[in-house]
Amino acid sequence: MKRPFIFIVAIIALLAVACDDTANAEAAEAQAEADEATQTNVASVQLDIEGMSCVNCAADIEEGFEEADGVVEGRIDFGERRAYVDYDADELSVDDVIAIVEERGYQATLLED
Ligand SMILES: [Cu+2]
Image (cartoon, rainbow, N blue to C red; front, side, top):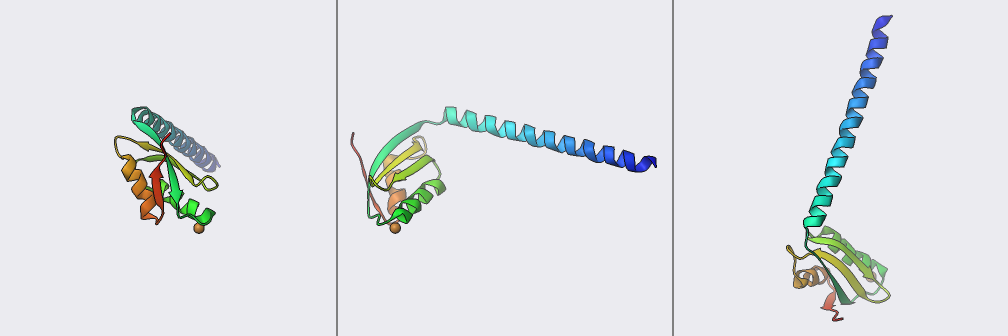
């Protein structure tokens, strides 16, 4: 009669420990990301994009940004035919960002403001 009770207590204890570990790991990961963000030399650039015929083309380029190392965030405004890209300037140059667009088969030119 006593055994099942101990077994259940043990399971609950194990689950509690596991959940706590997950929470700690998530907190550590969030902290690491925050540290990385403050250390990253983020630059922003706007590009004029040519060659897009539909919103799928915009999504295609955004996918290129997502897959590229060093791009913090890349967004395409299909209506304006424009890309807004935040990137790690220690890792990439503007030409590298343009190359990401060109690899997908579109043309990008730096928008001077
Ligand atoms: Cu398209």
